Image (cartoon, rainbow, N blue to C red; front, top):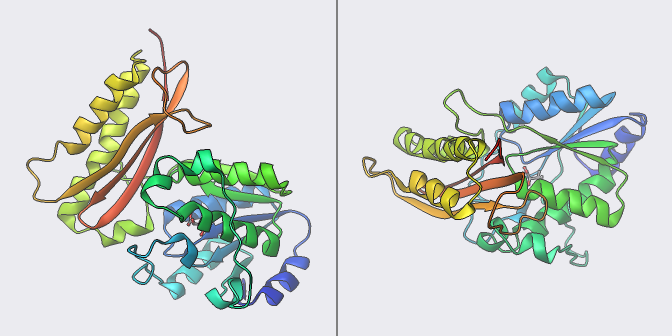
Amino acid sequence: MIVAKSIAECRAVRAAMGDSLGFVPTMGALHEGHLSLVHESKRRATKTAVSIFVNPTQFGPKEDFSKYPRPIDEDLLMCREAGVDFVFLPEPIDIYPTDAAKMTIEFPELFGVLDGVHRPGHFAGVCQVVAKLFNIVLPSVACFGQKDYQQLAIIRAMVKALDFPVEIVGCPTHRDPDGLAMSSRNRYLSTSERDRALAISRSLFAIRDTAARGQRDVVVLAKQLQDGLLDGWQSPVKVDLQYGAIVDVDTLQPIDRIDHAAQALVAMKVGSTRLIDNVRLTIGHG
Ligand code: PAF
């Protein structure tokens, strides 16, 4: 496995990889969820590249950029064992030279809801770095997790709007056996916080069942979701529910009734750790 640390090195390695290159952009602290993206990339392309870069521009001033885990040796080992062909491992100064003009990409409707409201500037930072990484790595396919549902929708919109010649693949959320969606931030959770965090997947699965049984009224489903998330009276752990919302699967805008399908999304702080998760709601009948 080759590790390219500069843009020039990365371009040279990429040129030797041929037309079919799958790409998994990450911020490191890799887990099984990332590996499932690598496996999907390997199914779809001859070679696979992973980037590991904790992108400063997608963190707000009060967020966890400096404490974000950076277990780089473990990450490289996991990539090697998963059969990754090359890793791009730049420094912030390579991606954001101090003399470069500032540039942002914006999608007002997709940025104006959910995490876009709670993390101002986050998606502009994500688009900025993903656009740059696509132009440096030049993948033919790129794999992203559906756990970051809004991010995936925004990246699809960016690729369409800017005509990037990249196929975007959304991969299913990887969960621990008890349902908790895998996230690099789960390692911040204490045992009691982790127990409290299980309300997120449980409540999402519960409304998925209610919708499958025919409940189309979003007010009813959203109340069931929020009640489930906040029903933690036995737990000493403090939570801050930022949203528990049911929206259109493509536009992410609020809806009143589910016609066929909708997306339910949650962001909740458990202790000081902000967690997100989502599920697809599909009406069975009714
Ligand atoms: O999903 C992530 O890990 C990041 O947002 C990404 C896509 C690697 C951009 O920094």
